[in-house]
Length: 416
RNA sequence: GGACAAGUGGGUGAGUGGCUGAAACCACAUCCCUGCUAAGGAUGCGUAGGGGUAACCCUACCGAGAGUUCGAAUCUCUCCUUGUCCA
Image (cartoon, rainbow, N blue to C red; front, side, top):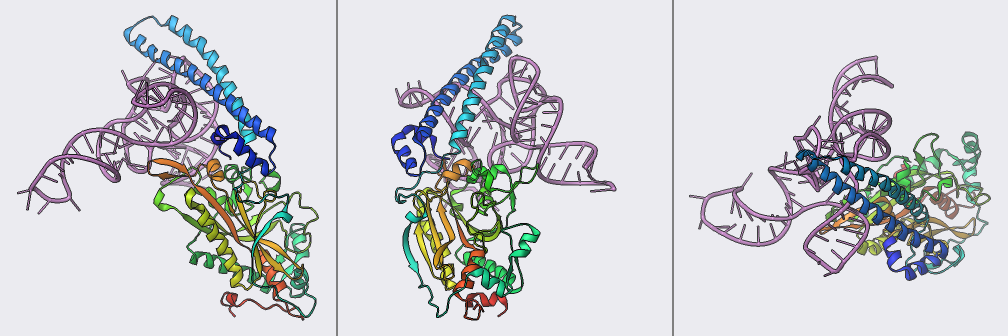
């Protein structure tokens, strides 16, 4: 959630920044107005309540002194009705405000480039050179089927389209990649955490998936439980409502989970293969820092993800997302795109975001800054999406006969 | 799944209707004192929101929500969590 105080105080600059991200000015003006109205309603209610409390105190004194209370009671009773009304108004205002505020995205950082969509993202650098082939490189689904690694039909049989089943070396490679990535992250100081794959509504509100993106989530029927779309949700919400001692910061976590996404609105995109699945494996990084340290942490996380690809000898590039492509909760995002020879293009394999205090405000994650409690900054990033890493390995290391060379760093994990 | 019990501030823990935002102790912070030795003393110490230049004042919060009452940590109901016993 954005800082309503800041919006109130500095409407011009906050709204200008949000307009860059495509937020309607009228909506922001409405938000500001609602905020004022709520404040008014609160002051009104609290004044009445204070009056009521004072009278109730008198009551005690009257009783002790044996005085007649009927006149006082009449006054108190009358006030009660007024209070109830004032409280109702306050509640309605509160609800109206929240409905708007929870749907406003994060304020983009000043150095985020303007743009409409992914075409306007800005490349930071390329790492490693894409391989050249003296034959026509195949796409991963062809290689996956030819090697017997992945069966897409079996996924359909069990669940439906956009599910797949891995076999033999395909399944082993998944497991090897997860282990390799977790160990890699651990070496960089990230504590491995194993979390539930189901979370409640509060957690999803905390990280910003709800209320706005309910259609992308799988919900358990009749229960307040959702399948997680990313480990970012449970990892970040581990600290929901917590006041973290200053010396515990920064907190660096890594975790592997399956991720579940309905992919609503993605119809027709990447329907073949395993680029876009309803269920996929991902190793995630989540960090919690003081505000002044989050930029440094952000760079560190980008490097961590990039270095994993380098260790796997996979060519990739780093791009800064433009305002139009930036996610709901992110102030800044760097995507890592891996080279896919079969598709002859770079495709997203990791996304690292600094949400600043956007999630912290929603999830009430704070730290003690000397005497005061301050909101922390939360960051998250994939390191990496396992399925897409498999795709990259297949396409980059394919031989003319369809065989695939396994990257050396994975050999120990595969008993090779 | 059933029965019973419990859920209070960083921790332990008191508190069964008003003088309790909450005793006491511990921890913590600042200051003071001191050669009789892991000492003593003073003060401070929850969170969120709002008002005031400020001293300060107001509102809410004792697992969550609803209710009774002029007034609830304290009574009632529902839910959640934990513990113990049973299946």
